Length: 95
Image (cartoon, rainbow, N blue to C red; front, side, top):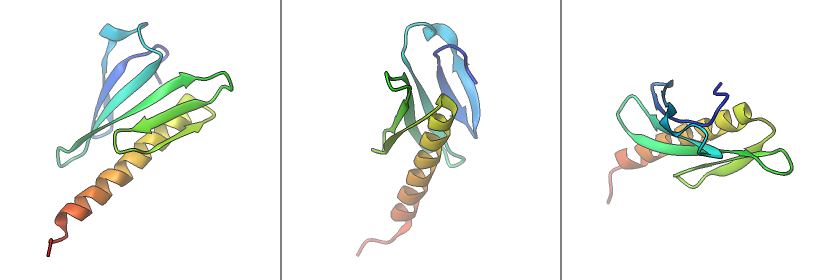
């Protein structure tokens, strides 16, 4: 877990951290790249005044959790599900 803000790119689940932006952000954005090379982003925001960590994906999913780790996990899971659904939709022949 990162102790300071950063931007990361995930390739097959492994973070590559760009520390050049540390200390300048109140959120962390991640680009997930699946094995097929499809890319999508999700962002986890710092705790709000109720100590909730909000998250969102570029596919339109969003939510919040009690910890950064939980928010990141839920955002990544939602994004993976959304990416899989889009791949299935692309495979369905159009009439």
